[in-house]
Image (cartoon, rainbow, N blue to C red; front, top):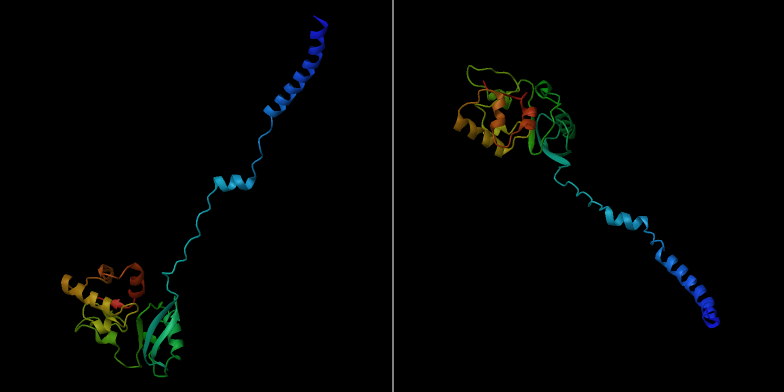
Length: 200
């Protein structure tokens, strides 16, 4: 090798070595770290918050009549019972026939409760058919008028008319369970009515 070529090789070799090292480090540079927040935001979608249920009523209106201190229309919290309605009306009068009232029944919106006086023939008793059972406090589904049917909890004018129409079109009720065949009366409503109605 000529002296001039040997001189250049001493300069070129170190430069080539430096360039090789730089290339190695650049080629193997670690990737940028991805933050946990970025990963979470890309992979997990948060569901929208549930909408509040506005269909559940928080109060009911009930018409309290008969032998109470202050008969009238009262607004009560949903789930209240007839006992609460009587209390709202100031309680029973001394002559009230308290035995004919089921205080444990849950009141339904637009329903009414009538408290008869002792010895008074209540609407339920007046509905008894000639020669039939005269159980006090029970409304006869086969003979009661629409007005008498509205005395039942949860039975307003529309449902009373539906009961009368059902028995007109299909004949007399054979048992109280057939009340659930009437439009607008389901199992839940029947549970509150079954101890208050009869068919004969």
